[in-house]
Image (cartoon, rainbow, N blue to C red; front, side):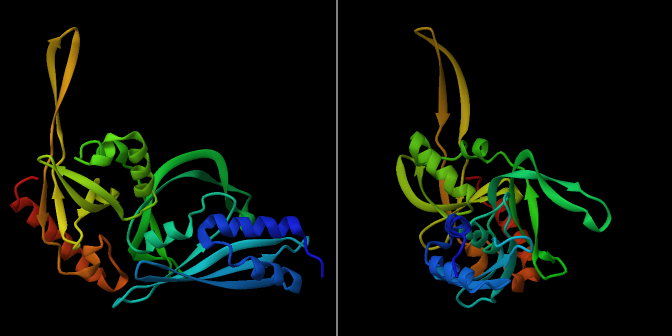
Length: 294
């Protein structure tokens, strides 16, 4: 059976750019040749020690020979933790990559420009479609709420992370190229490597964006929490050769032991720890109050 090559090329590129790579190309081609109304393809990958298994769902149009990539089910298996699952819809707009979906299921937030949705149609034919208007926001998953299918509900947040980032003593911010890469990595929800500056000393660390609390969280190589002092900018109205000079006070970093919960060490939360989340957050907040602001 001959296949629609344009349809095949579109599907394999869609799958590739959503982060599933090129290993599914033959599976897509063979499934289209088979001519079934629907087909599924499995996909497995690892992010560090985390195993991510996906099942991709495809269906044939009722009006033509075209096939569509409708969505995928994702399962996250982490050492010593309960398996988490989530299903995602795939459309023309507002898609997240596999890595971004993994980051969200691993309790981190992702920043993205999205198309606003609007209702069209009436009665049973009413549905939400993407408009040309866009907005930028952070999104993560609310592990305390699920829909009727058991999927964790998304939470939308608005936070000027680029402005907040300028207040931290991070070496990568000194170089435009490194700064762009740093911001892009944080926006994807990645646990991102950085170099902190303390009294002219460089400290290797990792950081994540925490838009729920309007801050960034830092960790050292041993997953110990680093409490990082934001820089304080003081404007010195000092006239020297006709120019105004701006003096910046350097920030500091202090190592603080993370909570004993392994999930808290990773800056995240899992469904099995829902009842512990508020207590851990409160303990963390009280610990911060007792520490010297750093």
